[in-house]
Length: 91
Image (cartoon, rainbow, N blue to C red; front, side):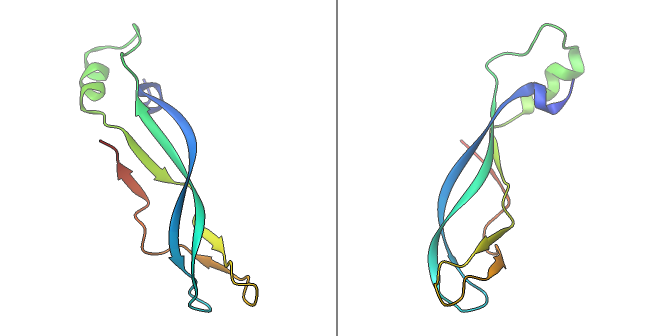
């Protein structure tokens, strides 16, 4: 079984405060995260190795966006997102 079989996936927007690297203006940005939540139970076709991997699996989210457009009307340039972890575990 693949890892995707252990999780339910959905895209979730979250707001973050970022600073544009070009003009230095801080702003609120909507970033898209892929949220993977562990399923309640494993399907019947799993073997012992899959059950052991499923027992260790945790909920987590992965950042899908790697760039953002500046909200400053004078700048409007695209900059890379820095200062945010690209993966986070969810409790």
